[in-house]
Length: 313
Image (cartoon, rainbow, N blue to C red):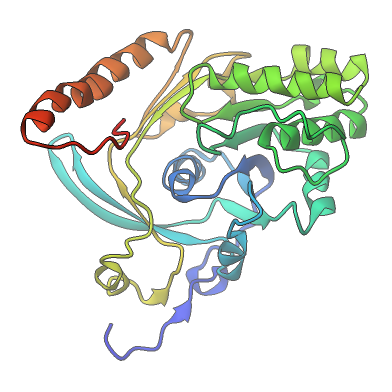
């Protein structure tokens, strides 16, 4: 691709102009989400006819959703590794994200997402510190810094707009790496409902018509290959400032509730996505294999003279 003038990645030249209905609001559009959940939804759209569009909501004031908007919310995912004994080295343009919203500068646009008729899911990855209660967010009026407060406001707007309709509740599927992540998020949302003196009907709607799915996720997503960007750029005939590199291995364990299997056809794509009644056995296995391996590394590391106390797991 030397000396070739490249256009910026966009939907017109990429042939990705199909408009998908907004079914998912996603908090966090960083490397992991783009290499994990957005990839999965893109696969479901292309291989299983899921027909779901994503709105990417910027979780912090210092985010960069504008970079995705500049290239029509498209980006290239490079997948590398070994799968079933086969060496995988592929690239694909992910087109599931339809729009990116900065709630700090376009708050009304964020609130308007609650009114989307076909909205059904909330995904998130705001790091393990994201699911936390901040009592200083003591007013329902936003924009809020706190992630659970944002979700509480969005749910309340949906409750009001659809007058508490039972079929307009959402399925909340967080990917933060804490135990019982969905239940922890739900508990904080209910705390905000109490702090803000929201109506009892809203609390009942949360409890009865919304589903909170605990999850376990595993995939290494290094993200933008800044140390070897030219090697990847040479494989593209367009400019992509948001490309992502990911390993091939993927594990997503989701706790069943409200017949989730019937709502998302995970079984129609070739990925290790498990919807189960109890995720604890999978969590225990991961902790023993991954974290146990890290622990076993400590003794030889210390004997080798390593004294760095950085967190390794």
